[in-house]
Image 1 (cartoon, rainbow, N blue to C red):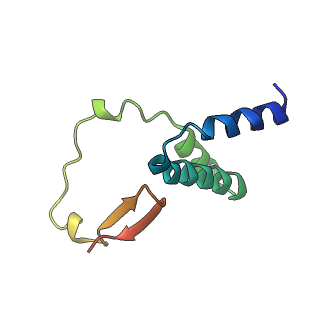
Image 2 (cartoon, rainbow, N blue to C red):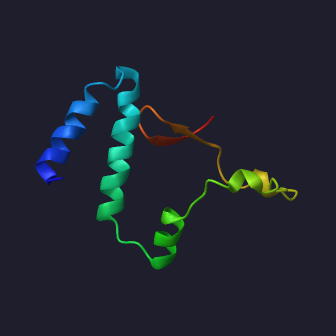
Length: 87
């Protein structure tokens, strides 16, 4: 499939996405652009390309006393792809 045909197919499929899901699509496109433009170490590449689908098979992490008090509470906004401090 040529690049032009592929681009046309993507554009056609975008027309069928509900308006409320478009911010999620845009966030994913932004991620793909960032991933392509950002230099990464081999460790970063391995992490981003790893198969995380079986994480549910692992035991939950047991937080140690004081661990959850470190850092700030964050919240992911799928509409915009932003991560904000959750107050």
